[in-house]
Image (cartoon, rainbow, N blue to C red; front, side, top):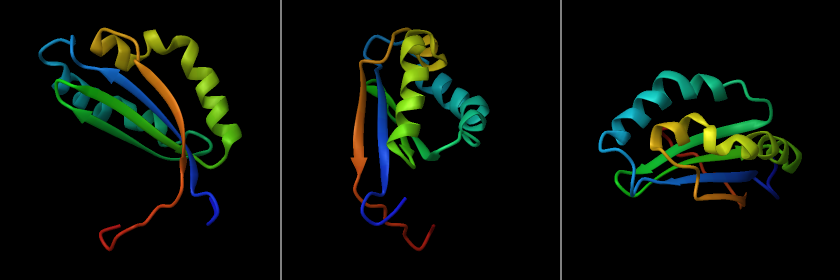
Length: 111
């Protein structure tokens, strides 16, 4: 990453509107127990954040070092998105997969 472009983002969002009642707990358990390890060593990934508004949506946000690495990940993920672990837990495919630019990243004193 450089000062001109802090990264190349990809957001994958699922709706939780029609998901099972215990889906938030299931997603937390999956992310902490399995998903984090899958992404810790993904080439080109600067970081990933899992976000959720219980009862509304669940999202994985990825930031890659280059547009090529983002595109390679997207091309490997998108064809099987409806069968991805998050989709299976939620009971539906993602409602949005969007690329975005990370303009800058500020790291606070807490790191």
